[in-house]
Length: 629
Image (cartoon, rainbow, N blue to C red; front, side):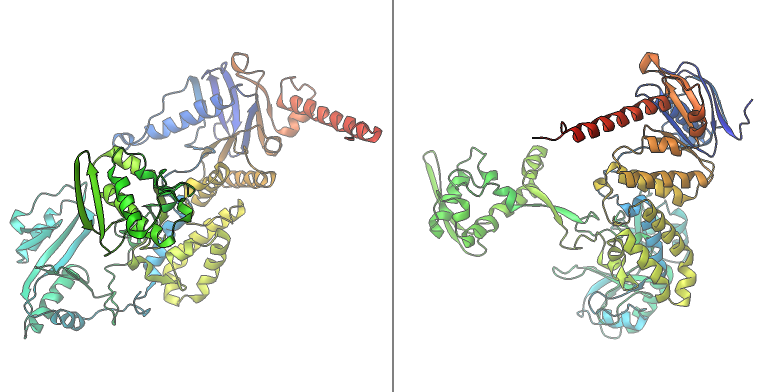
């Protein structure tokens, strides 16, 4: 009987077309299962071994955890011994989510967020000066500079985007003598505060004082600010009771991060500030996507050879309303343009006014509908602003779908495709913000992080040493699998199947797990021979960490590289489902009793056929028959 510590022993596997397969698979080895398509390779590797390993692992979790996970059905097998927790790595794009990047998939970006949060230096985007701590006297001066008579609330933001019910906090505040709160944008007496759902994030401010700006208020302001800073861990907010039409209605003060010249303030420097998937870090203009859908003039006028008469403005050419045509006629009348001239021959100034509006210039429009006729004088908003307005105002999904045909993705003008708020981009390390570091290729980033340590202070080194080590190791793994040309900011939806698979393999090496069963499905498909060799080296690295690697594969190089080979067959479908040959590649090749249907016998026949074909071709060329006349 096989030692379960050395083998995964499968007895009586009958899943799909398997015919009661009994097989011992060595643990901590690179094992290749090969055979004809349909011979039962995937049925043995995925539907039996992986499915049972995953099922047993999920069943070991608590009932609460299991409700969030998909429980796989028990495969048709008598018993499997020596099984480890199983992970499947398939050749498919990692994620189509536009928020997923190479950095987030490999978890390198998570370590970078921690690094920038702990040892990054904030700079003011207005002055370029390092942001320093803000004293209470500076805060008082800023508030006293407000117009006399300004009414404001002085608040302590004790909860910023955190989940919970906060009953204990409310009770403690009542004991301290505070009377009012601002909960999720609404003011309440503390005793009337609403019950909060612990599953959602909340914002809670304590009203420390209500003030009217006037002379002689400095002492009271200082005392109230000190109280607010103590409650909110160095933060205070002055909120206008009568918000101005122009300007800020909330002034944020920080004991830790504020520019002494411009007053630019960062509330907190935490890892979530650098996450474009978190509202505290994401650019508010594009919600952290780095791009926005905008109406594209090239889609509005797709064919520049068309005239306005023949429908050059495509969104306005498909409707039955005559209003659009009459609007175009009025514009042509006013600017002396011709409806029958191709778009590319029209004056550039006229085209710009037609697409983006006439500004303050008033035009005369005449509209007729049946026997009714009316005239009006007004400015023209432009075709593109018209489409934008209709997009904003409509509640119809059909209209949105129709207008969406004329939109294309463009870099966000607010963050310039960096995805983050100005506060996050103000924090720099080695002269770069976190977005600039992720824009580097993996090879460049690896060199940059290696050189970064020399620029850090002793305090920064002691804080960031372990984080830097993790980042460098993961970048090194990505380099080794040949992905040095990718950038960490690259969207994972744009990766090829081979790239995404190697990223997942590099991530698994970086995780440092041991004693895991990895199951892969034909990882060499679509790979160049150079990349195939790198893939095999990665699989060996996974094995050398102390894991079992089970690969379904047809590639000859992968088969000959394996520690152990299982050849399924002899044919496909109902004529397959059996183990034809197994053992090390060298042992099977030396065996004098290789079954005719073994992969090695088939390779031997194919090799002889190729050699015969090459010999015949050489003879044809030598005799002149292979030379095209």
